[in-house]
Length: 300
Image (tube, rainbow, N blue to C red; front, side, top):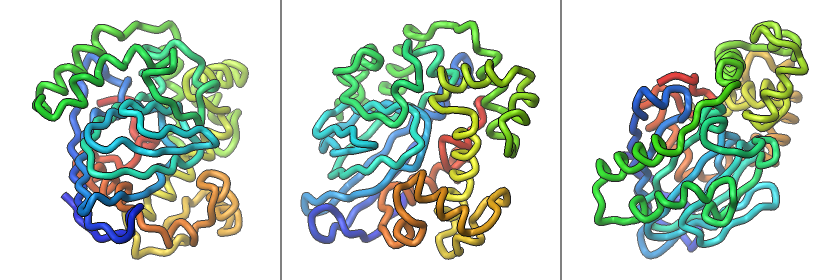
């Protein structure tokens, strides 16, 4: 549990954030980042604001306050079921006292559960109950948004629902090869990544667009950026030059990349309060072993 003072959406708000992470059963290996639960308590009826970093696709269910959120011109206000595609841009949100369940889909999970090209939903945000790609998960809302249901029962309901919805996919081996190479390696050229995955550049581009949401080049750049941002968030007394990934040529290149992925400069981001993300990433790194979804390897 982490508690801090921050400037919330309504004046100064005292708030408390608690995070819990649940390991999906082995039958879902490679499909999900984690099943996670977050409790946010904001005193005085206030709200807090934050920015989510680029990540894989997520579905989130809220009990209590519902968020106002925006990414890349897509916005949702007041929906209890929020769904996002894979992102390479920040998602800004504002939230009051609430309980939230989140389920993060790795690329293999996208292939097995979502019957839509990931590229077509990249950097988008939806009321999940109203979108054809996500509406199948709306059945989770009744249980996950009910305070009277225990967390153990809610986790069991997630597992039961995902077991019923999961379908095998013919590209699974290709997806896993690409995903492992992205996380484990440090590639500067698309051909290097394609060679490491044992496939042609054209096949790599097809797999990345269909299941990862972006071109191979953008995925490599996003991976490098998230490594740097995560290092900074976990060591906020450090300087950006200390958090920069070694593959950046210089600070000017890093600053350009930061602005592209977060739509602001590093100094502007560092000056903001991060009431949710800081505590969530710290807890995730401590409990889960990885602070950010994009850094998760596709195994449990």
